[in-house]
Image (cartoon, rainbow, N blue to C red; front, side, top):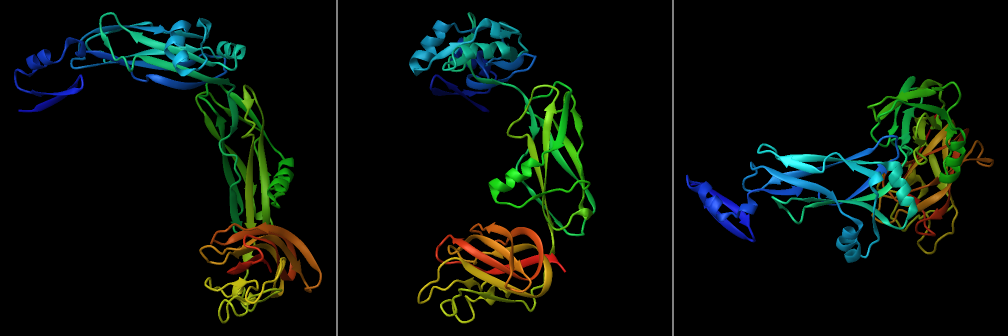
Length: 447
């Protein structure tokens, strides 16, 4: 014998599923529980409307359930009055809820008749964004809502799931923009790649029902502003090394599309480049202020220079406190991550700035430098400073700045390419002043 469990009025009723089970069920389950109707997406729902030339549609679903949902049913779909809204919501919650006017919405059905085969019915709510916007502007401090209630004179309604309370969060104009506007650095090795294509995704922030013509251009001023704000040294991609489509159409039914930017990688010298592609205009709606530019960033790496035979010196180093052979400048060139250079601390410490000078023994055009913090759980000291290059160790050219993170991985820094035999790392700030340290120093460039 199968056992069926029914939750009824706080208690459990166990029925034997024999030939008498339907009779037992009819006797034990009150008639009002044979069919119960409820709003599937009941309760408070927040909704943002898009200001287009079409109504915004929201769909409410009413479910027919219970011990015998094959029965027929009929319900009414009503909007609460302002008085009912105040009594049920505004006064108990102490919130100024305001009911939008009848000119702001329409329902495609206010009566739902369920046949024996129907398990649910849908009601489409059409909200008129411009009318809603106008209503909201009359009282911006109010919370504007559309409270919908399902009732029936003949059938049981779940009293806890009989209402949909739509809170209208606002009315916004759809906007075109790039899906991702963050700087994501693409790294290339010098001479390793010719022409390549970058696909940049852009689109509309709502379902697209229009053919939207979008115009694009390169925003050269963006590079200057970005460098000033972020302490970087990006250069604009040179003219003739890239191709950006001037226009593209986002067709109806397509929300996102890819803008294909072609770049001639074999024409780029080592360095950091940026191509800020900007949405200049769209045939309808607006351009997103926060996603108007996609800063395509490319780093062309010089060759990883062989450090064999290189030597290093520093104006401060710990010659004894870190153990024999450790803490001195040469430890940053030995390829051993367990050793490190450290500024003096045993018997007293020196003051910032610290200078760490490497003799590469021959001239290179230095294009990037990389450093690794000391491989320690907490003491990762070096914070920021400057890079210099020289041919005679007397006349120095500043080629860049750096700010290190307190991470264990190697950190790469692009510099203005300059030819020289020596390079200097000048440390001006520390996370644990007055100390600085690092495990390894690398250089990249061209011979």
